[in-house]
Amino acid sequence: MTEVTLAELCIYAASEAFRGNGEIVATGVGPVPRLGASLAKLTHTPELMMTDGECYLVEQPVPLGPRNYDDRKKAGYLPFSRFFDSAVWTGRRHAMVTPTQIDRYGQINLSQLGGTHKQPKTQMLGVRGFPGNTIYHPNSFFFPSHTTRVFVEGDVDMVSGVGYNPAKRVAGGNYSGVALKKIITNLCVMDFGGTDNAIRVVSLHPGVTFDEVQAATGFPLEKGDLTETPLPDADALAIIAQLDPHNIRAGVIKDNPPAQRAR
Amino acid sequence: MLDKRMTAAEIVAQLSDGMTIGIGGWGPRRKPMALVREILRSDLKDLTVVAYGGADVGMLCAAGKVKKVVFAFVSLDAIPLEPWFRKAREAGQLEVLEVDEGMFQWGLKAAAFGLPFLPTRVGLGTDLAELGGLKTVTSPYADGETLIAMPALKLDAALIHVNRSDWRGNVQVFGPDVYYDEWFAKAATKTYVSCEELVDRMEDHYEADAQYNLFERCFVTGVVEMPGGAHPSSMPPHYGWDMKAFKAYADAAKDPGDWAAVADRFVGASEADYMNSIGGKEAVAALPLPIF
Image (cartoon, rainbow over all chains, first blue to last red; front, side, top):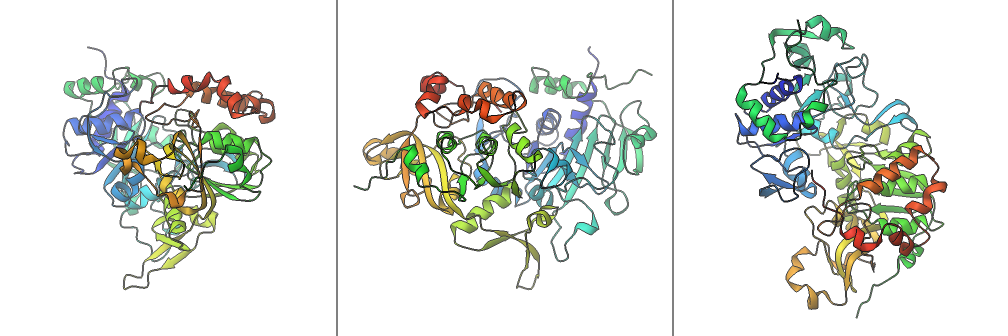
């Protein structure tokens, strides 16, 4: 049997973030989050809702990569034209995405790096739907490369998503929908269960130490009851292989390392 | 009979410098690119462009037509960062109002209903309000909640590409997702529609599809038939996007990196020239629908 890869371990960990979420739209943007959400639906949380990435709701998650246009079974309809009314602004969604930066408060950035708003050093996507997503529904994050460039020391360059920064909270606003859940990286799994929602390491991938994670993070991390992130079982691996027939997951983490580091 | 037929040049002649123009579609999907190209062939300038942006925003910025962009993203999907928009931003040449995707359609709806703003939670806890000068309002009811007042995105004109129209502006819009085209049409003082197919009287040709009349003809000022008019963006179910063309367009932002040197390739002296250069409308019709 081929060795389990670190990407597959991350997919398995990502699927756990959606466990027991109920009848909500699970959105995974990027191969690992999308495979994680799909795996969750096909195993422990079948009640999850999901789109084909375009506009139809599917009960059988759509595989990644090239396929025939009509290779999908349409069970429902959720186009962008009603995405805010149906999913985002009703809180019926959990998204897992990869921002460019995240800070100690869970504030995220995918809009611009450096410079000013009038003249950014690097223009990126724009805030997209992140301000709405983060104030209305649960969100998790996946980072294929855990470094201090992503987990920044100060605040992110442009706050595109709501975090737990008290200084940013306009008095009288309703922040009851803010729910940051899990952060999965190539090194570990974290949550927001520390003091005042501080980011806390909850499991380390095989062979990774807390000190190594801390060194790759620009702010102090809290330490949960650290466990080892579990490897996917044979059933999960088979489902992942079916959902990703072109092995797109092999290109997500640099050099596609095995889950189990050489000791 | 009410006849709203115009040429693309006549439509662009109704626009003027400094106008706020809304452009329908979403990223590389359902963009009225033939009308955008007609603007690029004109002397129009100092535009405020309001769009879920793709190459429409990129090209207009590259050509120096734009004073201000109202956006939540500008992207070509498979090419995530729109290269010409990026260049214009990093040169500091644009004013911007950056908003969330949901706030954006909320602003169009406020404009459609003639309201100064619509309240929302979205934007609180982020940098949007401060950067965009957005104000808050307080609920007058017992909850007293503080909300962002998303200002109306009032448009002088909207440009939309639809599947079918008749001479009177009875449109039919299908394809799996119509994004917020309806709200662009209603937020605008005047809406100009290009279409894949133009008929004289809709009821004589496609009566059975009347439910695809996404917005009513009172919101349509002018119509023009432009098959392939969304190219290089997608126009389901007729054709998919042209990723090869997007790639060439993106590469040109690096080399030579000068719009004046490449505009002829991506705009052409006329729409007929442009269509010929890409192999005609048959080549556009053969582009496969994108897989997500």
